[in-house]
Image (cartoon, rainbow, N blue to C red):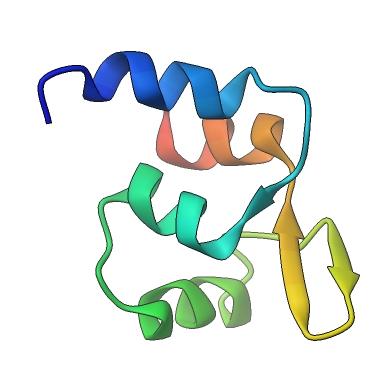
Length: 67
């Protein structure tokens, strides 16, 4: 994607929690399994669960992925 840097900054500065698909995009992963493994290892923390959905804090994702 040409403007991937702009898209990443837009996602990280939008002022809301990120869903798992957005975190996968920012991390460059293709599989939810990788994200779940990172959660189990304690590398990524879930900020909030809404029913069956997970939400992640943008500040934490910036720190983990070095964005």
